[in-house]
Length: 212
Image (cartoon, rainbow, N blue to C red; front, side, top):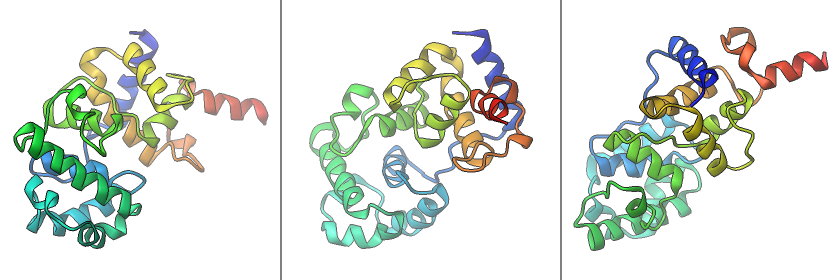
């Protein structure tokens, strides 16, 4: 744990006091499906799709028995719909066959679900089960590297660095804080540095200043 990371988290909390999971869900399983759909897709779009989807289909049994082509049609606007439909159907089947219809609550078990990767597992563990995990999506990856919290080139490496840098009681919150900062301030293109309270810690900002 580092004092620098603690101060960054403090400033992020001030900047984004309402940081939270923006996916809509009513059960652990709905969260799992929503997170799978959220890959390379905005949460707003996912929420529009799941509002209709979950009204009729919201249990593993509903998806395990669904033809893939039908699910593809229902989730088409989320992008990568074939791969996502495959993942949802496969994970649903595994949950029924190996976990009694309940979403497992450990990293080891979640990663055995076909179609579930480490990022999805971390989100489910943190949001559904209250575990101290940090899911590294594109926003977390970009923001953590710009703030100098990690210099690793892979999400797994960034996750390891953040876990080492951030205190255990802050990790779940840190996930949402970094997402909010990346989503609403530290954009991939044209980050709003003039609105950011963390420029003194930002390697990206300092690098741009040196180039001018």
